[in-house]
Each structure stands twice: as structure tokens, then as C-alpha cells.
Image 1 (cartoon, rainbow over the protein chains, first blue to last red):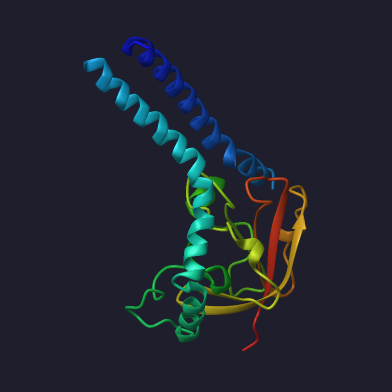
Image 2 (tube, each protein chain N blue to C red):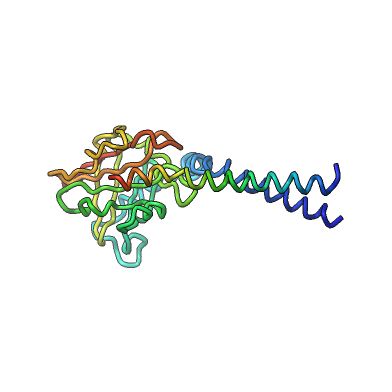
Length: 39
Length: 193
């Protein structure tokens, strides 16, 4: 596999990881906060 | 050659991000295991609580600020005050609409079971049992409570935060771990001195 191909695969994995990170951080506590808001 | 170096950095970033996402939920579990079995923190905290005077002496850790201490789960946290619900992301939040400690009524503390955005202060609240001691340092005074009840309620059940005619604290968080399906409430009555 060429370095160029590896580079694009890793960029893809990095984007997926960052999206996963955002989703995890946001949804891990948002529903609890939403419930508190309605209390 | 240069692209190879960039690939190494990208790989390291991908691995680090994924390790963070996977390992952080396990961190409170590992930390508590270490506190309980390696440094015996619950027993140390129980002894510390006994040495705190009704008016904590100046210069000691507990002389300033507000603290919630639950020795059985090795919890010793500052209490956060604020009107915004986002205060809960900083740690143990005293619900501002409820009573203050020392007053007749229900003092309510809320915290996360698990969050990526701050301390997961009540990760092990499910291990608190009836009869456990809870100590509160508030405005330079020490208050002692004994757990009378633990229960699971639905998120829409607001009975746990309603005012009461006795002096009690209610501590609640999400249950089960990593879910908001229920609320786990620990209710403790103030000890009569």
C-alpha cells in the first residue's frame, strides 16, 4: 500500500473518530441535562 | 518519506482519540477499585470524618468551602453552587430551588454518574446502603446524616426533590451506569445530636 493511500485511509479514520468523540461527549450527558431542565 | 511521518502522527491521533472514548467510562471503576483495595480510602475517610469538629478548625481542609463526604464510596467533593443546570458538569451541584443544609426541608444534591464533560462524581452511588454515614460541611458547620432509603424512580418523578418537614438530604444521579433510564436517589436523615 502506498503512503498516499494510507494517508487518505487515516484521514478517514480520524474524521470518523472525531465524529464519534463529538457524539459521545454530547450524548453522554445531554439527556440527563434535558431531564434536569424539565424538573 | 515525509508522508510516512505524517501517517505515523495521524495513526497516533486516531489511537489516542479512540482510547480516550473507550477508557474514560472505565476510569471511575478502576479508580474506585484502587481507592478501595489499594489505599483503603473508605476507611481513611471514615476516620477523617470522625476527626472533623462541628466547627472545622481554621487552616484545615474543611474550614473553607462546602463539602460532601460519603466514606463508603470514597467520595469527598466540593459542592458547586449555581442557578444554571450546567453547574452539574462541575461536580456535585446543590439544587438551588431546594432547602439549604441545616434548614428544615429537603436539601438536594445532583451529579453525573458518568460524563465526558466533567467529574463523574456519583459513579458509585449505587453502592451506598441504608445506615451509611454522609457528612456535609456547609458554611463552616458540620452536619451528619444517616442513609434511610435508596430508590430508583423514573426521570419524570419529582417527588424526590419536593420539600419535606424533616431535615434530610437527597442525592440523585442517573441509573443504571451510562444510561438515563432511571434516577437513583439516596435519602438520608440528619442525625439528632
